[in-house]
Structure formats: C-alpha cells, structure tokens
Length: 113
Image (cartoon, rainbow, N blue to C red; front, side, top):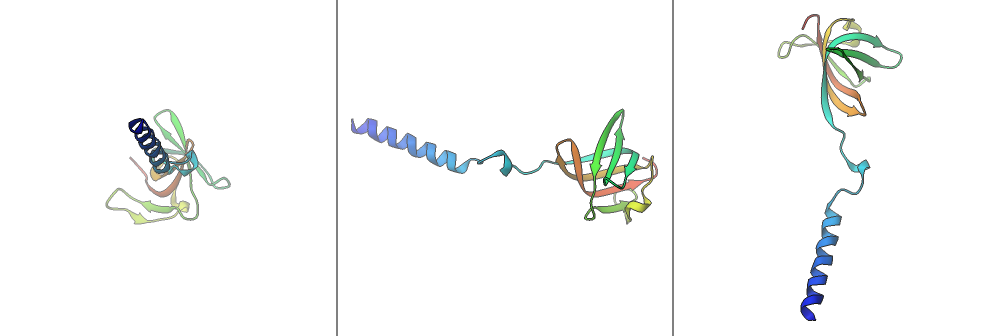
C-alpha cells in the first residue's frame, strides 16, 4: 500500500514539474527568424512593403523606420536608404516572419545579383 501511494505521489509530482517547465501557450513562442532574397518586383511605400520575386514565387517584405538599409555586396556594403532602392535590383533581407510576410530588420541590395 505504501509503495503504491509513493509511486502515485512521485508520478503526480513529475507531471506537475513537467507542465510547469513546458511552454504555456502559442503566444509565448518566439517569432521565426528568416531571410528573403531575390529581384525587387515592386515597392509600395504607402503600405511599407516590397514584393520580391524568387524564381516564379513572389514574397512580401515589410519594412519600417527601424529597417537598416545597405547598398553593395556582403563585406563591401555601404549605408544607404530606401530611396536608393529601385525595381529589378537584387535584394537580401533578414528579419522575422509574421505569417508569410518577412518583417525586415536589415536589407542589403545591389543592381545585379
């Protein structure tokens, strides 16, 4: 009898500790980081979005005033601004995904791939 009570208490305690250490809800999950690169198809300054074509697939990049803009290739980039970005430029953006849209932290672009 004592062994059964001890086993039951141990299992209950293990269950309580396991649930206390696990994530509580989906809202507590961190946003998934990611990257989008390809050719700039269009820039919508009213909606703060850039449509980027990767092959035949369009991807949406959302930018804000906090987005860091760089011109040039990796290692040789220079500070820039959104005003320098044009259609058909190659762009590489890093940030976090909000659904299927990338919310950009940093975007690096250049004329050719």
